[in-house]
Length: 271
Length: 299
Image 1 (cartoon, each protein chain N blue to C red):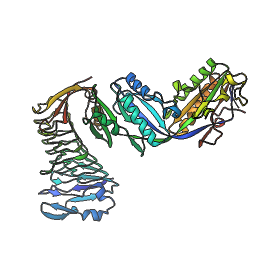
Image 2 (cartoon, rainbow over the protein chains, first blue to last red; image 1 turned 60 degrees about the vertical axis):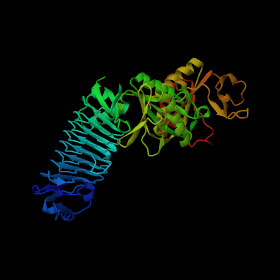
Image 3 (cartoon, rainbow over the protein chains, first blue to last red; image 1 turned 135 degrees about the vertical axis):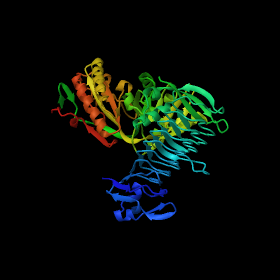
């Protein structure tokens, strides 16, 4: 049985849990884990005040309960596997370096912000700033992979520096805002102003999208690298068809207000 | 020793370490993947004159390739790491980058790697772009057709070159028939290539020459036309033609397995004799005795 932390009842105000990671808890006794510091609002508390601890995971951690007000789940993890059985609050997987974080429900804002490695899988939907940048920071996510099986809200991959964000559902406005590099794949549609002020990087849209006038059409082709990415994403469970993998994409270069070295690839049809 | 009606000489093949890489080429069709692989492995029969030895290992089904397209895998060997890196850049650059619809990937696992795509990216003249997926970096090089995708680093490994069998027969047609059968059997083994045309060499060589500056010359002791002129001929009286198959592989086991299958196939196809080339055991560290290859050999 993996090491399991069960939230007894939802906290009255947000609970911050930095350090609750498989690698952070590895080798610790149950007593040590129960004594770990968490912040309940502005009040210091012990983990045991909120969670029941059971099991003894070997690099595997499971967190259960109504976790919508629990922040920073899996933040900074470097290895192992963390499963959140249900929804997760803000900042889940922020600054992740490695390992796998699976959230079986929705996640809040700023999920995966500053992420540098590992894989974050959201089986529900994600709030604003998924893999994005904190206000005032130039670069957002710097590596790793984020897969969302539901929708994602605004500013997905804002400031994206490196890494892959794929969303099976719809992505909100300003995806890839000021992105520097990396890849965003939107299987279910993109909101307004995708790629605004992007310098480099790739946004892939599987349905028609209205682009800013600062993007210019280049050509229609089958990007060889995209086959690798889409095969990879299908192997990870995202619903991609053979037609999408082998299909033609319109390449739009932009943002013309920046370097015009980014691209938005819009699916045109199969084979 | 005998295997069926074939006389097997009790000797050994002498093989050497060489550095090897596996290149996976994909394309929109099997034909174009093969075309690029053929070009990549062309003029690479022997390090003596080509600086490397290369061959097509096998065709790949779409399910076996990184991008899900039909492909081909080729092995390329050179005497040292630096030489191998240079040959990879030259050959992928001239033969794969130029070939319609292709992409090129590293096909070997290993800690030691050399830079290939990272060099070829400069063809993009500043318009190239990279992608990092699952820890592997790829370069997208814009070309007139569209885009050439090449992996940045290729793994290299110390392999074995110079495995061989030598097939003797009463006449040229019989030797060729037996050699073709042997080459076909050897190609069923993974991790090996047969670098000579069709896998078969008619001009086995010895080290050195009476002419200064020539590092290899004809192996007169196995030339049937010189049997009456050469005092130490190895050509039996009833033999009129001799062919050699050279095998390079990523592992000694693979080379040995290819030799074994080739020996059996050559015997079955009617070779009168099978022997192997060596340098008296003084040069190469790998000695592959024919005696140990096939269980059915009898003294």
